[in-house]
Figure 1: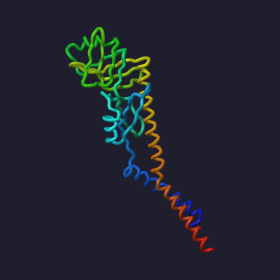
Figure 2 (figure 1 turned 45 degrees about the horizontal axis):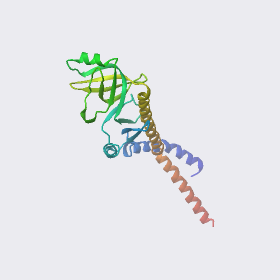
Figure 3 (figure 1 turned 45 degrees about the vertical axis):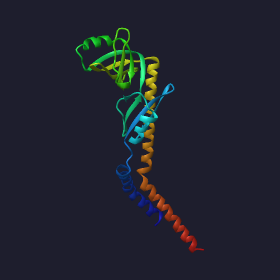
Figure 4 (figure 1 turned 60 degrees about the horizontal axis):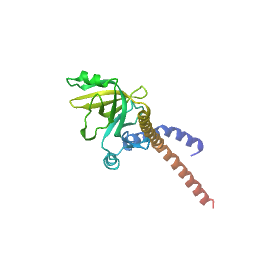
Length: 235
């Protein structure tokens, strides 16, 4: 086979070999699309790790990073193929400004609770250790909440908070150290997502053209064999 014939063979084989690599990568060796991500405080910042293996996730959550409570984190719509479920260790934020309260399960005194919260300051506990419940008073208000939604407005968040006989979605604002803490958490989540996306891109770079790489590798070995045979024949 001369060089021109080999070039034609390469062109004809390229698309079928690429499709075979795609099928193998998609159905036989699929990249794990979904991950569980755990985040913990790390000095003044945050440390997040994504797990695609459920056993590793459970081991780290319950033993290695054992915490009194965890809360779910939603950062908004995720773009691309990969997805995750994010949990973070318990956090406490004093002097949060309560903006709005929307009851999911409203008690008889819902109007009074709403008036006692909106426009006031409260301590937000993200994560609910030992089933604790929110307390509201004129002197001091603490809200035990599960879940953190990053809203579009800078420094504004929403959590599901629970009291005796009531539950509500509470929108609140943080400034200063509290806002910086959640900014660090969001950055750590995005960094871990970026690492997973990079790994996925490298995975596709290797697996999709895998049979094309094999084609060139076999071609190279064949060329070496031909040259070796010619060298031996020619003495």
